[in-house]
Length: 277
Image (cartoon, rainbow, N blue to C red; front, side, top):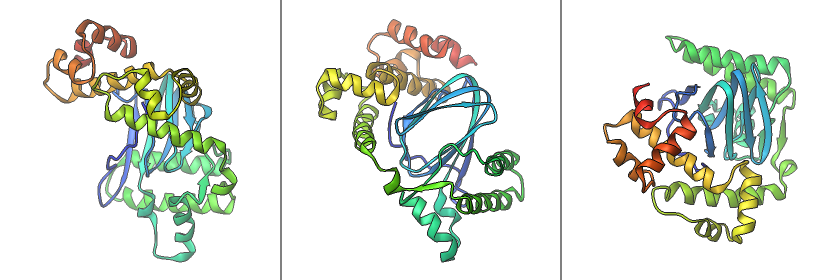
């Protein structure tokens, strides 16, 4: 799926959240989405096929990626365990222009972080942030904030960033069009939706739309929609007492047997068994 995520991550007084993604997590397959927050990703085991604004990467164990704000991103895990930190960058502002200017440029996307840093010191700092977030104990908030400031300093000193104008290209127009379609799919996933409907929203012919969507996301519009519906169903299975039949209808499936078959194809187990995990 692709959608604009508006969720609050972490607490109001500490807007940093750590998520560990295993095959049991409803969002294990990272549907395409974007948000104003920044996100760090690291792979613990296996491989993660990650796409950032139509740029594909393969992350292996020990590797990290930095996702800029408003970047459309999604990922497919391959026997993979990975972690994400999603955070509000503005919380790191210091009321000191010497530091805040760089942060403001990142917030406004005048400057973009290098998405796949190769500098050993920077990568080690990212891992330190993950480990400190894992502790989640008294005093760790100080350490996390301190490590983030140190990381930003290293990135600025080593110029591991690019200007937005330098990064701008025809690809941005495609990303904007993709965001429009993804938002439409997210807002209407529970309703009947045809390829003609999606194509019309994108302002493209049905044939060209399918090629465009596959090139941008690596999957077809129909498969993406099914994956998103299954993800929403998985969340309801874990977080509600609704019947499997009701969840199927609530998530856009008009046929229970088809829902069960589709859910199993994505999750490897039936909806009923998934609820028991």
